[in-house]
Image (cartoon, rainbow, N blue to C red):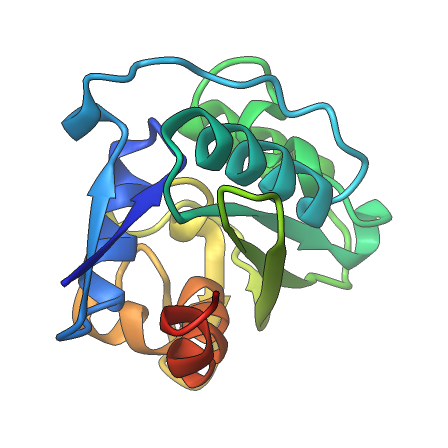
Length: 196
């Protein structure tokens, strides 16, 4: 069994990654399981930059294979905001972030948006691979649903006629941006496991 470290202190993200990435030969472990509660400043200019900062730092620190996910919401009418600032868009929490986006889109017709997940897998020697997943939808007119986290309760999927916040986690974990990025990672898993 190969262990891969998740470079995150976000409990929601860790839970979701573990649920989606179920593989017989690999066990995902969290920083918390290593009694590491350090946070790293994400000062990159893209999702890839930020994921790489975290993955490289903790892969080197713990001398083990590490994955990091940087993800966020991209809203077309807001010129791509909140983007890489998704988690701290309002300077407060998830609920306030959602309200800020809804407020900025008041009376705006174009509500197209997508979630991005950039997952980086980094080896202790600094070599890395990246996998990008997206899921496209719309910003709802109001907050709906209490499943998920982040912007899930305002991200509307027309094919399900629900927000991510209303979807059962089993469905969301099949179609989400993070699921799409992890699918790409899994397709490369033999190469990853056998990397020398």
